[in-house]
Length: 349
Image (cartoon, rainbow, N blue to C red):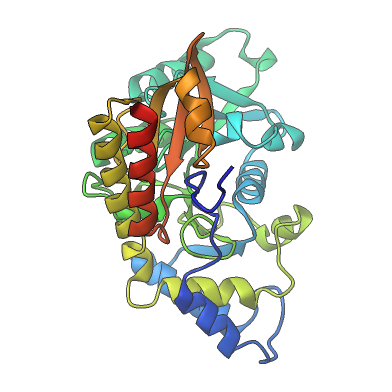
């Protein structure tokens, strides 16, 4: 396999050059640990400013799975579970991390990766009206992601309605923003950081997949929602002793609006790849406008393709076809996009 040409995921590269430069520049400076340094304080203030939520709390954690497991287990009572689309990351690709913390993932049907507000409303109402609900796992919060696992986006009106239902039932809404930079850079997106801060009780701003070496920034928009969260983060092994390494990265990402623009080249590259797939006769699967491209491919062609480019197996489509995924990132080059075009042309001939 020619692993030099890879569209397998959006964290194959290291970090944005501006981050690497800042890490090198500050390498020998001595700072307090555990995020008590000035770089982390600056990053948190910049994030609150970008969200226009000065009363919010911001915490920097090491990675996405650690963040989801830590936030969800911190919010839920022992008898509660978290509602998610059946395709949600916590339900499919985190090795049961939430369940390992003692909380069930309660799944709703997935609609191109999204949950439907009306179905969520019925699900929560059915629990309340069930005479046996004391014997059932109580839905204690709602989990969504933006973009979703299928690269799709929630509209402002969709998120507003889900938020309204959660508040009606007095349960927190939590949004996973592992790929948030790619949503913010997508022309079809109509949700801003300020909208997320207004409509979600907790969300996180992804760093690992969005230009950082590692790390995610949790924004708790409701003060006091999670008491002693710092201690809980440490319990879950998501606290970095050299916390300034996280602080420097997010401080850089939130300087000069870098985070809001870093995904633009990835979206442009993904659009080019979608066009190349269609022009070579490949069928796209899912209406994803972000940096994930899903394609239905004949299994005999797939072997030829995978010998020249690295991409991801997604799911079996039927006995003779497979859904595969190409992913672009902030670091995807035009050279690699054009090389992929040559491979696609060869495989389709």
